[in-house]
Length: 158
Image (tube, rainbow, N blue to C red; front, side, top):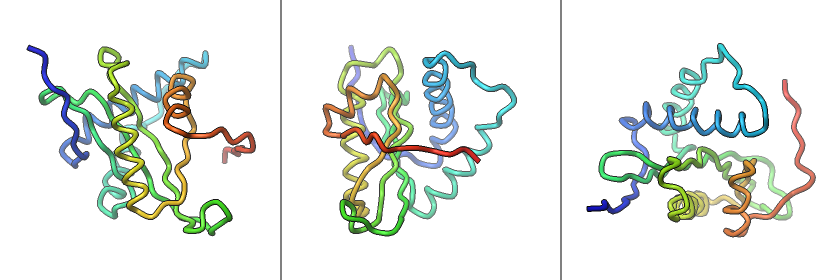
């Protein structure tokens, strides 16, 4: 008998699995561009520190999809604030991350459901916009949801 997918918020008890899935997502995205995942980078420790701090202060929220007890999908929204501007007068932004679905559960609407839930979290937080750096795989999902491309996005690594 097929189990029903349930959705719930991330808790501290989920962090080990959540972080493993985040690293799998980042690795998948990194290698899809023809690059090799850098060796010797301790993402696990840095992510654990980040999620502990930002779950505690309310500036990170995540919804999970589960099949029974198994986490099969993740999402994440970090909340930041910058000076208000014309299209975001609150200055509050949601930074979407950690969108990942176990490969054997893809194309079932799980990512769309998770995306809707974290976007609502951003709305409830008072965000005027949600930003994402989308992988090639995610562009179709985000475009269908209503995200728009911004050709002016640039970055500078320090």
